[in-house]
Image: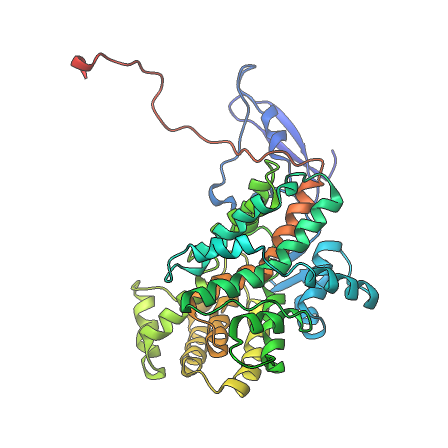
Length: 428
C-alpha cells in the first residue's frame, strides 16, 4: 500500500477506497466514487466559507499562518518591503522574477504611458453626487472601463491581457485621486510622468496652486511600502471573487470591479477604517483597560486583531509598525497611536487574547498611518485596492492560463422541500 494514499472504509457499504494524496491534499472529485448505489451521485464535501478547501494551484503567494510567514514568489515580504519599489514587486508578482534594471525601466515606462483616463471616464465620475463613497465610485468606474476597452474581452490573447493589466495598474491611482477631488469640488490633476508611482498619486491627490508638486520622500516611501504589503494575500475573499468571475471569461475590468466590491466589506478591506472607529470609541490611553474588559465580556470586538490565516503576529503588521515611526517623524504623532500601542501591549500580555491567538494584523496600524498622511478614512479601502489590483490580476492571469480551471460552480447540499405540487388558489 502506497504511503501517499488515504484509505477509506465506507461503513455504510463496507467498501474500501484508496484516494491519492498529492501536495498534502486529496481531490474532492475522487470522493465521487464513494457511493451507496450505482445511481448515487457520490460523496461530496461540505465546507462553508472554504475553511479547508483549495480551489486552485498557485505559485504567486505563500503564507504559513502558524509561523507568521508571507512570501511573494518565494521572497520574504520584509526583504521586498525593505529593498524594492512597489512597481518592482508588481513586476515580480506578474512575471515570477524580479526585474533587471532595463526590465524595470521598460515596465515603469509602460505604466506611465497609461496613467491618463479617457475624458469620457472623467465625465462619468462627475455624474456621482459630491458625497458619494469613493469605493462605490471606484467600483463603478472600473466596470465602465470595460466599455472603453472592448478588446479586453479577448482574454486568451497574451499580449492583449498584458496591455489591459498594465492599464488597470496605471489607472487605479488616477481614478482614486479623481474620486477624492470630486468630493471637494476640486479640479482633477493630470498625471505627472516625471514622478514615481506613489509620488504621482500624491500629486494627483493634493496638488493645489504650486507649479510643481513635491512629495515628502519619507511619506512617498512609506506609501510605497504599504502598497507592497497589500499587493497580494493568497486566496482571500476578493481574490477568490476575481478568480470566480474571471472563470466565466469575463474581461479583467468587470472582474476587478467584482473583486473590489468584495474588498469593500468591513470584514475585508474596510477593517482598517473600523480600527479607527474603535480607537475613537476608546478615546484615550486611560480607557484601554476598561475597553478590553468589555470585549472579554462579549461586548464589542477588538478590531485589527486576529486573522483567518495568521495564528501568529501578522508579518505585515511588524513592518507597518516600523514604518509608522518614520511617518510620524514627518507628520507629528497621531494621538491614536498611544491608544493603539497600549491596546496592543495589553492584548499581547492577556491570556484571553494570547490563548485565542489574537495578534495585531495589517489593519491595526495602517489606518493610523493613512490618517496621519492626510487620507480620509472613507478612502482607506480604495487605498487597499490600488496595490491589490496587482495581485488580483496576477491571480486572474494564472487562472486563465491554467488548463485545469473551469467556470466556478460549487455544489450545494439541498435542504428545501421534497417534490410537491401546486394547489388551486382556493385550496391554499
